[in-house]
Image 1: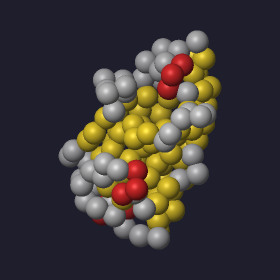
Image 2 (image 1 turned 180 degrees about the horizontal axis):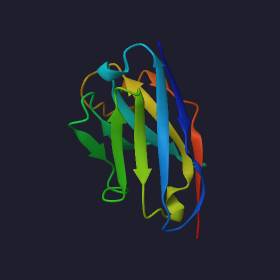
Image 3 (image 1 turned 135 degrees about the horizontal axis):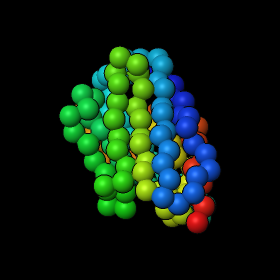
Image 4 (image 1 turned 180 degrees about the vertical axis):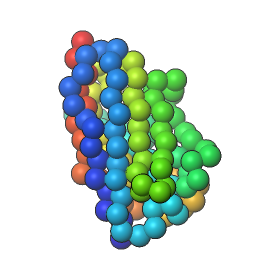
Length: 124
């Protein structure tokens, strides 16, 4: 069992930055592929970024490529999402998730554990 707790969300103006953190507890964090997802009202949950267990491989959705950076610190059992040049369309609840694979999990259903989410609101 892995417990995930997100933090760092908030209200920011367009063009601003936020850094989300996801603290993991429970089983060995380093063996899990991690992902950040978001869900806006009335929309499906979408994968934003993902990272393998070593941090050597990452994935980004086209909509955030060049603006968001995912990273992890296995010694601190934490994964981060640095979000720069934020846009109003980035407004959503952001979730972190853990998959019991060493690589990058693509499908939403491949993730086994989820955090409770943190709200990010970008004003225009």
